[in-house]
Image 1 (cartoon, one colour):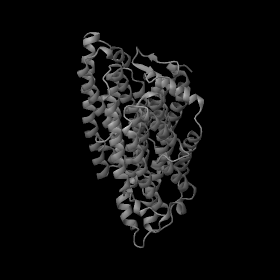
Image 2 (spheres, helix red, strand yellow):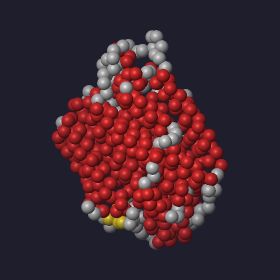
Image 3 (cartoon, one colour):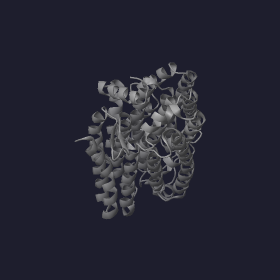
Image 4 (cartoon, rainbow, N blue to C red):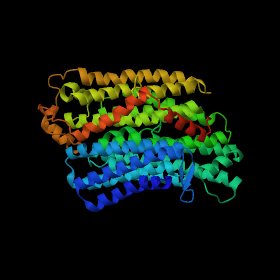
Length: 511
């Protein structure tokens, strides 16, 4: 299978699934059509990875680029899309929405398509369009449950993100104008064209353009202080949607910031661009630490953890150098896997206990058994503790910071990660090892009224009955996320190191 065929399968499989789910209009058929598309996209991505090392390769009149950086982001997206598609079968059956499930899976496949397409976009303007399409499709998934909170979250999501993306569009236009002064009034605005023109760009135009696109795409990433949409959207949507938002969508915007950093380096803009990205990364860690420590909502806890890890990614790319790029890319994959595991567990908890309130979720291992301990292991991993992959990637990013011009951020990063470690695991200590207080449980009628749209099952903890066993569909993807997360924490394969070296060289960060 060649590069062109791999890209075609990755993009056409979810497109065909979205169309078929719309036509078939049958819940069970839609489940497996979407799952088949996710499997095909993931298999094609695995084949594409080694082929991309010889890149960049250009397709469709240079509108599509296949390089190591883009292929790695596609791997993260395809992994999450596959895991989320497996989990959605069990989760959405519990939600009792069979009459509308074909629409859900059509949108889910469409979301998979748009997020998979973004890293392939070589034209800067088309990349902006692809990012905006992810917003339009995912908005309908955020409000799929059609209760007041999810609709409010969807409106907040589309308004805040669209405002940010509008700034990114303005920055893109300024970049085009600056490039026209060098390349002529009309030219193909590809990443390569901007890099080649960068040394000759007007410094004021280039600096203003970079700041605008960084704020714009940083809004999509969820970097503080543009993060306000993220906790609501991630916590109010169905758990399979939260997984895609956190583990896939955020990465597609982060790759834009990484590519624009390369252009700013070529333009010789000095320390300002990287310092701005580093400051946004530290601010994201700070905001995440504040809200994680005092959080009461289990899905918002996971959402603020996403803000934390996007801050870590920003620091990796902001520090730069081969270590910074390698650490950021490794962190990206590990976070995608780990956050999938955490949202799977959170979704299971919401359906089992019928509540989002952390104080009402108690004695998890006693009620769940092995899946409960698996979720706890994921909680340890997401805080960056050994022996999991996020520990290695954070250590590499800290090393990159020590060699950068923003060494002050290393101390801030280390302190804030310790605070987050203690605050996050304190919530899990309460959920796992604290007993329910007398009278704390909510009545079954209240649960049915308040969480029917979120798929709360009869006989949950709040109604005083025994918890129904977790569906196999809801447990298997947790293991599929956990196993590679543990392996990547114990072993860096040489092939991955070579891949990171190629990606770093492609970003101008050295071998």
